[in-house]
Image (cartoon, rainbow, N blue to C red; front, side):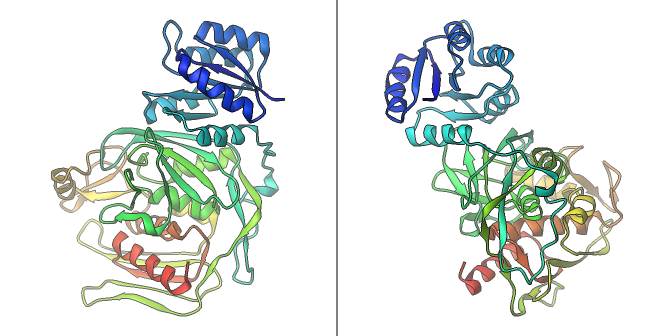
Length: 415
């Protein structure tokens, strides 16, 4: 019988949660404050701790530190009725395995406990995407994947300017990629049906909550083949340095686990032309043996005319596409600010353009702007949550066009 230690100064939580956990077959020990909780941990050596953050005398973060000093492998779930994403990120950084918002749902508690007790094997080099053979159209299905351990990332939202972060958790097969709002707990699938804002970034909306600027994270999931993931976040995915490089580094650190179930790729069987306009916009997809993106843009200086052909490989993505950063003209950010957006555009996380020059940084590539367009497109395409095999030709298109293509693919292939 697995042993769970509950540490909470609210008697109602202890008295209501403990019998529910006992009904599920757990042995439950209760402690009504932090000091007693630390003593109970030393005495009982439980398999799992459920710990309230806000307690008098000794708060949950201090209790978490002391428990982790006693046992560096201790499994601790933090709970709070006054939490936000900063609180959740801080708790996970200190060693918590997860964060749950009050009021507690027994279904959510049992789900998180189940994840804690899952026996996950450590990823080996053979199981990481860096050693896997490339995707080819002769394969009918691909294995589903998740990350090897939880990941924490912290930064600012590009459009809200709010200090934010996100915590990524491994998930079982057939879960898909799910965003969970902190503190409300609403879950929003990363699927095209939930897209609601596609002007300056791709955003998703549930019944009550929104998550903005998902494209860089989804592009990285796309290229690493990650199909099952829980992303705890507030209103906006952090922009980080404006690129996807940090996300890629975190994926490599966590490792990638291949799962037993498969996922069917979207194999393009006929040419689809979505945009063919006199102003130079063009977007199409056609059959190919792998994912290929041929992208060109033409604009006023300093962007000018530039192009790049991406051949769909992970290593090429990590080296040539992921480091490319969000960009925009100062006049555009002034307009966004008047709309309540663009508040997080800072000197170190976007390429700022004014007149005919870059004003705040040195370009990482001569054609960094079109590479970033490919990054955004890869993220938008993954709102179908499966590999896509086909060649895309894009000219001067953006998020709105990308989502239009995704919706057309969903319609044609009945996804």
